[in-house]
Image (cartoon, rainbow over all chains, first blue to last red):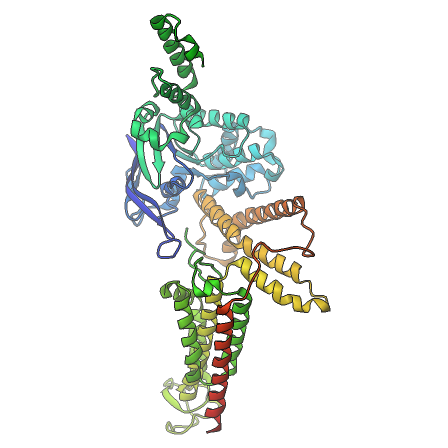
Length: 298
Length: 292
């Protein structure tokens, strides 16, 4: 069952000025309940604009965005309610922190969405737990934290409102690899344990390959492919366009194939990649009986 | 979120037109001279000439006239207020009069001049209309001229021009370079801050903040979650910038050369000459019409 459905959505940035540019054209996409969908594409391909539509920050015209069965472009649809159900984490969300204490900042969302006092408290506690923030941190100033901690506080501030869909715009941009991985794990957890539908925007394939059930590739404002990671990477045409954005394991396989080895290139995770190379290698060994061994090692 | 995006005043539209290629110093001086000239004229009929001057200039700028006129939008209320107040409050010969039925009057004679003071009388006078027209024309011309200048001159060029012109004041201790540097940094930060502001507003809105509160106190409270991050950001960026400048050995304007030196060309001399003749002619007409 799809929880979000986008139909023929287009958006023109700064309409009727010399700076006018088409940010997205004819985008259609659906997000299934409980899945992790990754939207990938180069910088400026319209990912962030698309994400703003999901939250009603931009009116869909032309096109429709249907969340949980209700068209958000229609009059009378409560945007506030929509924003509670669809949590949106912006790029570099640590820049939105403003309260005196961590707990106060996380409580901002739930308070605005009309949670009762007890609900707010438990929501804050839960959100901090989920983001791996120690309870002792709650009385500290968010501005005294490290960058990674600030980011997690900001994300906690969004999930505290208990959204059923969590949309993250490049959540690990600018983090060190360890913090980035930890954050990714937390997001996976949120999806697996709480059943939160996750839409994650990224331009790093390596990051999303780990968590995405489905991938949508965007380029120049439109979606050029979508499906499981394997499906997307096996399409030749997509391949040519998105070469630079392949996960490292995949580009290794492509490079090997170009040198004449019979490897499959639609494998995305690093373990599968290692196995494929080993299998192909032993296959060649058997066939040529050592004659081409030097070539393979190269 | 599209607010702050529709303001054309102060925006720069890159191009390669006659106006774009003029020396910014000449453009600035011509702008000042023309604005002063407008304030020296005392008949709205005469103001048509400088208005036409800037209309022609905007065709020379290569920017669509519609886009330039959109810059006038924010000043329309001011123009209207100036027009209405002037036309109603100037004493003189009435063309339209309205008197509330409950009001008693000192004079019932409509054909004569309105008395200096009639509290209940609302009268549009010929003199007022004339003066209102005059004021609005002047406002329109000044805004048009200023936005034409900023549309065709990049912020760097503007500050370069100001620095170069302020250098005349250096013997009396005017810190020309510092003023120009401060201005260019301030200008440079407007789009950055706008972008930050928009992002923060969006982020807080998606966290449930709404900016359509009723009372003034509520409204002010709404802006705390926006202003605090904005200021934190601004201070951070300012510090980063100062460190970056120091790391590149910035030490003021002495002995500093420019990547793009400003050079006057035939365009500048031709337009200066034209403006000189234009202003002389206007002043002559003004004097001439007064003496009749």
